Length: 114
Image (tube, rainbow, N blue to C red):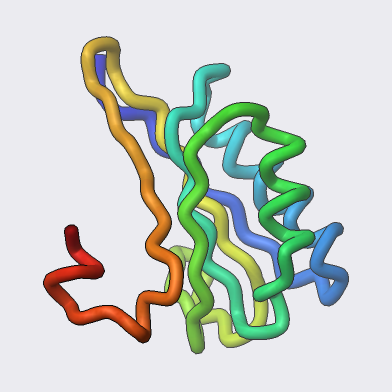
């Protein structure tokens, strides 16, 4: 089985509505009920904890990695305002893990990587 990937985009100005729209589109486009990883890219006005909470509540237990961006490119064009969600369903036998480094700016690059 191959990796299944789904992408959803929203330009709704309300961060909760945007998170719901983008995550729902991505879930439909993934064509899988098993989501292993979510990558979330949002313009700066979407760097709000409610975005990740909303996406988490829709997807259930899955790894989520999020970041802000000045713009993102899709087959629909270049977006300077919006939210993009990419969902991955991995084949059996493929595993992943995520981690978070606290106070990364206070650590050396070696210590942060460890």
